Image 1 (cartoon, rainbow, N blue to C red):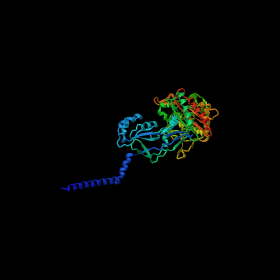
Image 2: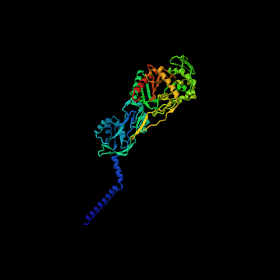
Image 3: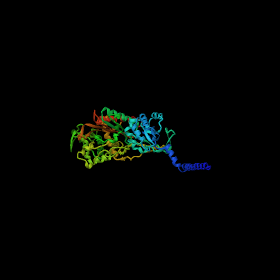
Image 4: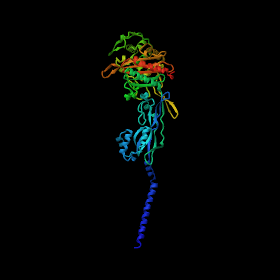
Length: 550
């Protein structure tokens, strides 16, 4: 009986030794064999990976003024694991940040999510207000937001980006692959309270996007936009567009659009680039094609009978805005006789007219570095009706955009070369810049034809329908256009809706400039020479006096 205590002691001792051995084996297993597993588990509790977008490149005008850049804002996110009361958490933040409570709760309740956005891109004051709440599981990441210093001045040209700074419209979209920064990955480190989250150095380094230098000039754009708005208001027009281009190389110096409802009331038109995307019948400005085609025939035209303003053609009657009798070749154009031009076109031949229409870039896109360009509408010559053979040469039954018209007049202004209109000039990255290359200009008219056509267009301004575009002591050429709009509901041309056009150029051997103006549905007057030509003159006078033009 005396051996029982010793037996109990031995049993307890052996039990403790056994338990110690089990604990020792477990420690060895945890420390050595499962070390990597628990290291990873700890990291998952304190670290998270987050993708960061590199800073988007700037857009800079030809004078090196910044048109678009990225500035820092803060974005709020949450780790649902550390949010105890999701309903209260969502209620507080929805009130402070003006967001949907239900939507935030839905994000927080998603399974296996350790990172959810609360609100993207808030300002510094809002960030401080959220920090003062001391909410567990809330963190901040510094992000970039696009900023446009000139506000709406270039809205229809620059376009916009989305919340992640990806280009959606305009230049921002076309050059997105260059402007967009390269993404990087960073760790998100939570402190012991899980209230503050800090970005550790990038695991994959992000890179800034390239800067884009454009051909646009902020000063010219400002004058154009202001004068365009004044004209639309004065004539109670529906909308209007202006393009200013260097005729020698196709550089777009200004490109503006405006409408009667005001930019703030029409957010779609606020960004729509109608000068590039809208197609319309051009009217008499299109006669420049017949002019070039006729001169190229090397024949002298006798006096042309303009039938006192009324001429029966297959399918309809052709009218002039004033009755004319016999006119010379030049008079037909600077008085803008539809009948005279139609007769000249039939003499040249409708197939040759069609070839010159194609040669001068109509019926196809200009190739401008901008998304959404309309290529216009040009029916193949084999499908032209007998009526079309008379009316297409005077600018009816064909669809064009303003940029195509500007390019066609540039051919006359520069001596016969078809250029590619463009907005991009240089791409700059890491201190180096390279010029953006475009299709080389193509000679389509001889210098003789271009110069003769130029003299006729200068006469249009000095003696004809374009007198209101005349600038003393300057050689100005151009063509007016008053186009009736086709009413699809009535199935005929409207008697009350017109488009007033004027395409002209500043004749300079150093820097010939083409300015295209189109005003849609003006009310007080509808003539291109009355509505559009004076707007051309205002813009041209400013450009001539501008120090960069001299």
